[in-house]
Image 1: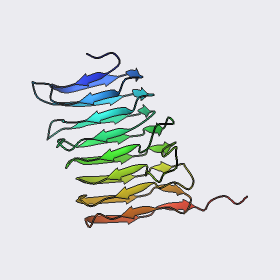
Image 2: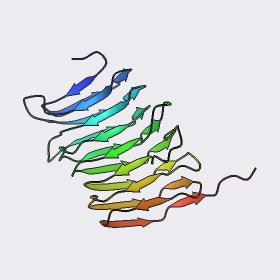
Image 3: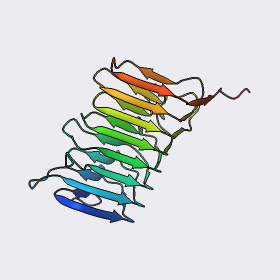
Length: 196
């Protein structure tokens, strides 16, 4: 195992708690490392100061994996080969100066974000969104996007469907939908930029 990286491969009903990684290129890495992919529930755990806090290349198609009460100081990336559902509940994301997007959904799987908060993306202010999705299914509910004047969500061509509801945004940028997929958006709130 590379120092600092948690490689999670073939395992069933794995429960991981109180795990912390710092400084690797990838914090938690889900993949098939030669014996099949995993399903897992990870609680009270996090990845700090790494370019990719969580990389999901492959999980079991029927069970996937989930994080509950996690903290991540960078990016979660769901790769194009993943087929299993991936869920995050009550998790916090904040970035380092190198952080662009907090979430990249590239796979055909389902990604669910519930009750999460996000701050500190797009540090160089080049317009990177907090969440970028261009494949699969996306469900975002009850999440808070704390950075004012930054793009929270971009749905790109290739995304099949998304549901985004009950979220709070800051500033006048909302959800950019370029997907052409079945997208349902509702009951979100936003605040206007503060006046100087």
